[in-house]
Length: 251
Image (tube, rainbow, N blue to C red; front, side):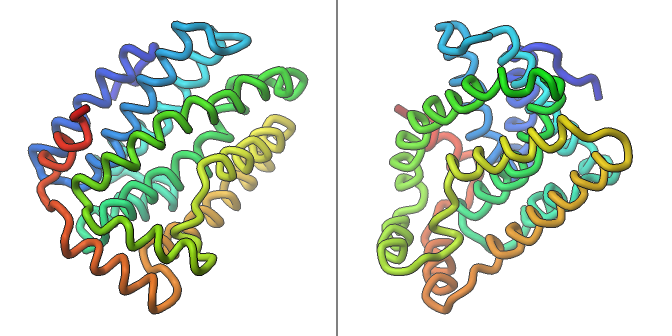
């Protein structure tokens, strides 16, 4: 697998993954589509020079995307992948809701991959110069997240159940926060930038284990009320991946 070198090539590769998952009615296409939208939004922000160092941000975005792309094709070819991605990919045939499939991908990619991508982009002596641009991504994502939440209602008409539960109890599935995840990813990036060799590998392994623990909770959420809600949610959702993506893609 030849990995992309530019954001344009990343988007083309993500399009291939999306087409493949639509043809196979593979639920992994849900995350791939939303991630493609995210990458396009970052590209737009780079073109509009929203970052302090736009060339560096493109470099980081490509490194970040390739961690997912490499994992996707390695899994497809039955090669080893991180535990977090393995949990996400193995869930493709589980009877879980659309939002769970989406959050499993987000969990692996943000909580595990993003910190690694930042550390690979900047050295320990320069990592702090990346922080403002790293955090600016939160604003870009917030703009997209609001839009995608509304679109999810088209394919998951009972999404309001999660909002209702979220106002009543502190459940990890409801309170998965993009901003909080990115803050944790930044902390991991700072740690990894200072480590080398076996120590760096060991830290990534520990992060992978922690992220995988969260994956297990996302698949089997705690609490009878939340379990019931996500089960009902899944029962009334669109099941065809192509139709799901088409609905999410409409303005």
